[in-house]
Image 1 (cartoon, rainbow, N blue to C red):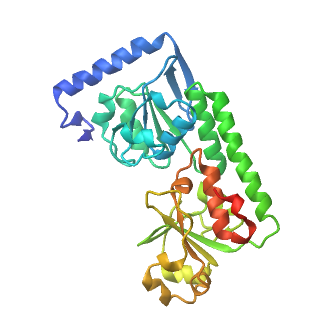
Image 2: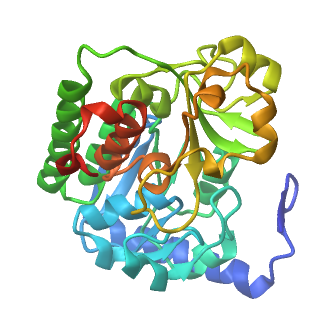
Length: 317
């Protein structure tokens, strides 16, 4: 399926096109009487019906936030990687984050689709709007962007008091971590989202903010892309003292694991301080790579990996 400039969506049946038009018309008629207009994080006004909604989520962090706001029963569709909390696994799947199945989204008749300006392309947002689907874009591109995303979802889902409580919980975690790492040295840290190729968390991202809050200094400081690819010559030149590897396995409750999870070929790079001293750690990634309500837990995991001596057993995530 692809959009043709002169002819709409090729490959769609006439029945589906008629179905889409009916959904659009009914949504407009039913929602016009009691719709609130809420701006999304791209500054676009989004009309949201004043009633229990049918919601589709296009990112795991969004799904987690909907549940945290007490609106899980409104969700009718999520991505194939939305696996937390467990009830999300039973919901209808609309494909991946980058290229969800538009036909499946339409068939779910959502009143509101949540997307992120980081993980979902602007072209996707435009396509959803051309289909007449109210689409609310979030922008969790910094720590405060994550906070504002949760508050914005609270406004969109008529759950503002709950959203404030969720944010207050995150902020308490942040203050606790800051207290624990205060006054300690700030080691040079490389956070790798992927190892082959090396893909790092760069400047201008919420992950960069988390590394700083956790008491580290990100070695990727240039704003040449949010998640740049690195080569080993660059890593050697920047001499990270701690390398953190995003552990993408499903069990997000595991403890951090040591350099035994480091690819064997890395041992040849003994010029890198983190490799020479064995400070290469695999850290469970779900609470870190999902900019949502568990961000405080993710920050605690990062800080424990960077400053293990600052944390007692009672400071588990």
